[in-house]
Image 1 (cartoon, rainbow, N blue to C red):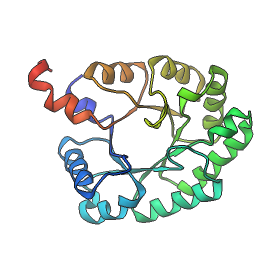
Image 2: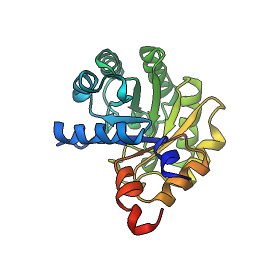
Image 3: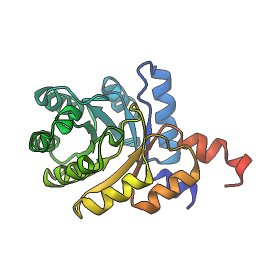
Image 4: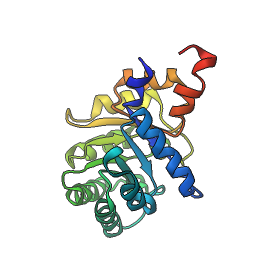
Length: 222
């Protein structure tokens, strides 16, 4: 795949706790230049990005991030605030404690509540695969499908592990036809990016896309 094609899959990400406005500006400038799918940023920067860049870039943000155990009411309010500030896409973290307790109906109900709060905006559901058994991953595929979220997402990038091809294939085999897949966490090479796309991902969450596809280009012959 060409680098232009790969950039179109990328949610260009900066979610570090110590991200400065200069870091966010760099991210947004790169996203505008290379035409990434979105920038994925902390909620506190959404309005400033929207005011500065207008419709030059698509803004994604995170909710209940990265641990997932905020209350549903708190997550719903986060969604409403983010959309009001200018976000078009929401990446929510499920309540992993509820998953581990087997309270799958409760998880599904929460996703439905955030789906309603999102309206026509895109909702991606992070299930944090590194903490789940195969049966729990399959249950989350069903919950995401039933709640009519747009995407299921592998990881926050802040857990003990990131995306794997095995998990993407499992998701592809267990989600409904309307649900897309986003891989995130540990994507470090062009080969990684291509492999995840070929496995069925419609989005890739990474902070390294420019390093991979531009800065390393002269050394690797991409």
